[in-house]
Image 1 (cartoon, rainbow, N blue to C red):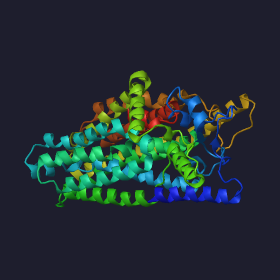
Image 2: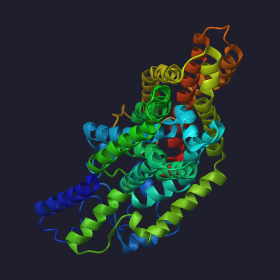
Image 3: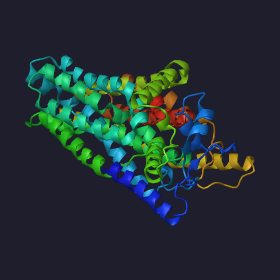
Image 4: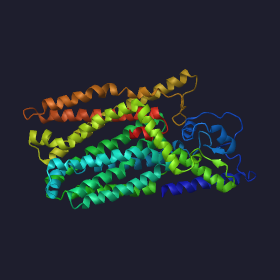
Length: 482
């Protein structure tokens, strides 16, 4: 819905621009287009973005045969990074709630495992496969999420993924037996996987590197809260006489509401797709079929998908840093999903807490998240100072946030300095929890260790993804998947 309106707006603006210059009937000099004139064009981050979608060795031939459609300079209002802050924050909020709803589903029924096991006549250990199957579905879908979004755009991926996610969640809520329950959990993870895998790329579409310093921690909060809050609600449902299926119905209501928001309020943000729409309107209005974008030069959607998928596998094989960062995140998620099933031993059996209070102890993780977020304004100021210092060294005046020169941002490794705090704290918090988790020691000691874990989780997650976004530049959804 929103993307269709966006497509029409682009056509209307080009029409208005043509009416202001009726003498130019061919639109050959339309802003944001480039012919093969032999003049070297200015290199910009957006230009490099589009060049990534052009097959190697074809650049000279392409420019001789086509008019390449680009942005109308650095202030083009069609460029998502030039949208008003209100419009960008609206899109950002819709992406945030999508991530929150998807992660909510991952742990929604974790505290009701005993009721589910009794319903399906299986052991509680077998029921732990529920969370595993959902995560496995996300992992399988992640292999294709980036290539798909870079072939057809972000908006169709969000909409279709959200529809599939809601449909399979309905299956989970109505599952008649254990096998169906596990199958629908896997399919729900698979259907929603693309939402989780491209939200970082969408953030990069909307915000420049300085703005991402505060934007990424905020959207990361959706993932943290979406995973840590559901056990609190699920614990009280498990302790009450309410059916365990209400954890699934609540998840379905949340995801269904998010589908509505996605349909009506989430625009397309992927620059190559927006430029492809612009080129299509120019061809229709001028009758000149030479107007193309870099995305159009890849003959078919299947070819685009193949190119993007090969790029993803190239990163997997040729970029060991992506693997190492991924392994760091895997270590963190092994712990968090272990907590989903192990809290009964950590707090229930050790301190004699009921399911309700046991689930409430997950809020300690959220406290850790917010402690890390308190450091974000400090890091944001330091990052801006670093950028201004680099620009001063290049003899340029201080930049504003919108016109950030692509070559004057700090090296990606500058994003890793928070890891100086969180890297050693991660094993410390686990040792602290294991060493002091006994009934003779106050429960606040264990809660303190869990709070420190939340701090580490936030720090590792934010640090790794900001680093990857800076390293991989535009085709970052492929890197993020791994």
